[in-house]
Amino acid sequence: MPLVRIDLLAGKSPAYRQEVGRVVYEALVGIGVPANDRFQVVAEHEAGALLFDRHYLGIERSDDFVLIQITWNEGRTLEQKRALYRAIADGLQAAVGLRREDVFVNIVEVKKENWSFGNGVAQYAE
Image 1 (tube, rainbow, N blue to C red):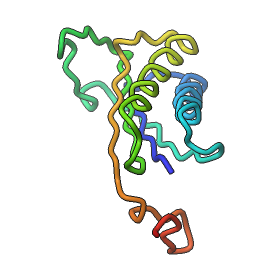
Image 2 (image 1 turned 180 degrees about the vertical axis):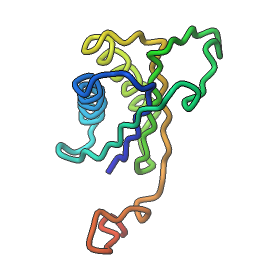
Image 3 (image 1 turned 30 degrees about the vertical axis):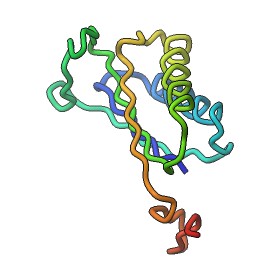
Image 4 (image 1 turned 90 degrees about the vertical axis):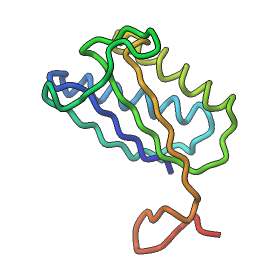
């Protein structure tokens, strides 16, 4: 049920974008998201269309900056979220050489009834 948006500056290869998506998906599965529950949007932005502070909180960011926003059901623990952040940053560094400083992750938590996966049905509504 996560919906993942991955935003980065234009210029990366299709293989790079696919690998970033794979790493994020595998990190999600690693903390308990069901296998095959993969819904991702990868968007490239021209210079000036992806705005970010290069020095916020003393973290030095480069043009390789990647913004990852995950919308999912509420209820995960702080430990699960921390493990996810680490797995994404470590996985991206290992897979595509992305510096940990360039990985920004934001989680948006929603109630289960806020999803319809098709057929006009709220599949997770209780």
